[in-house]
Image 1 (cartoon, rainbow, N blue to C red):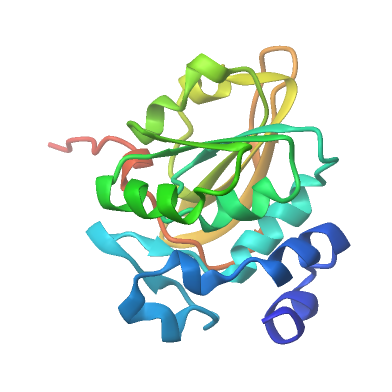
Image 2: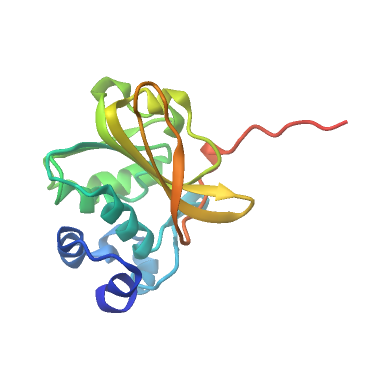
Length: 205
């Protein structure tokens, strides 16, 4: 995975590579899917959700330029894979997931990691109780980022997410500065949409 998928695609941060080398992806997929854990595509989970490809996780973490001291909010924890990667790098991870089965899987898989907390909650609400965060990662493609989430960033804090633009997924980075925030795409890659962040459908007459 590291030599064939990550390094050739600009995942070169040695801290990120080290975390991905020691974190077993097969621990974060259902038993029946473990043979798919290292393919270069999304792995199906329950409730229509997926474990995003390792490349998208690696690119997000590389672009985050982590110092190791961050408090991170992870939205869309899934089965806990990205939370586990973060836990090996940063000071604190608060992970939010709205699918009960995935929360249970993540909690079990992350049980030995003291710096990770997993909460079952509406993804769009984040987790204001532990705000502000140095970094928020949304592990999926969104059509909009609620102001409520941006408000949970510290001043100068960063938000990384996938963006869904007419069916094309890109990774994007934004920073909260002086009350302003905007996501700027930096890489085209496969990352699954999160339905909770779809724009409301408008009516036409």
